[in-house]
Length: 371
View 1 (cartoon, rainbow, N blue to C red):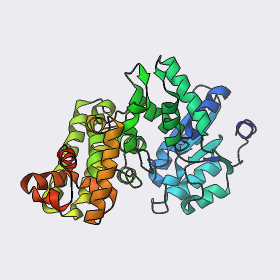
View 2 (view 1 turned 180 degrees about the horizontal axis):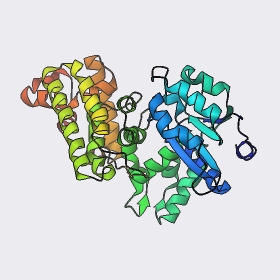
View 3 (view 1 turned 60 degrees about the horizontal axis):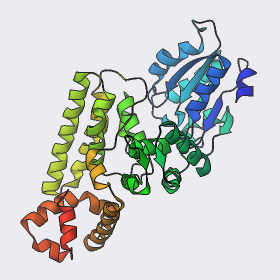
View 4 (view 1 turned 90 degrees about the vertical axis):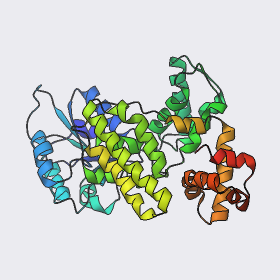
């Protein structure tokens, strides 16, 4: 990529960096711009989708010289987030890339998405592979040592393995379990059991908090293996960490409150058609509640309730065992059975015989009543 950018001339194609999320695509471009002394102009194609927005926010940047007299590098993140239905956005992006006076680098999680075929065909393809587990382990150890935190070898390796080749996810996980500790042990990793999602929940939070478009926000939880109630807990915990204006914080909590009302109606009526409103209010509602996007990186925190539930390996194992047992008896998945636990807690409180019908032990009943 460095050679391509240094030798780039107007009319040459862009670079398309592709690979799964959390492997350093954006960071790589930022580092290259810094090393070359180029001014970096960065935009996210998932947020700037329409022809009008592309013209107003990107096109001029690819034509005008830098105010600082330096060369420019144009970064367009997440081009696979665009679609053919985005009112001419993809076509306009093609024109902008073709006419740019400066080198362009695009990133995508899935470069072979049919929606960006025209962009892919004109690009120099560079794949960023998953980070090797050994490399993640070494970096996490470096972080812990610089933070003055002692650690068990197996604890660090487990975090690295669970990250699935994503350095960002590994660092987020490490911070969530190690912050405030003097020592990290395998017994401290209970809360990581809740991170079994195809899409990292930290990434979903970032999408909701950083985007200003309804379409992008609504897609935040598409591949997230977390139920709506759990995701609302993540939002409740992290809204004040992300939003700085009191008005934005209040508006976000208002939307979460409205989502919780629908969640309560689902529990009382079992009308699961209402679930779409829970997700819309939690994602689109919270995203569009802010007046403007906040720049910079935010340190997201595990919800306190999840921390309590996952404080030990024993509670994690207990939840898995109970979820499987309830799933078999209720003919639902383990994930769905976990989502029903708050409802079951109320049912059992009023009808203790239900616990017997489900063949639940006293310990399991007590565990359910914690929800």
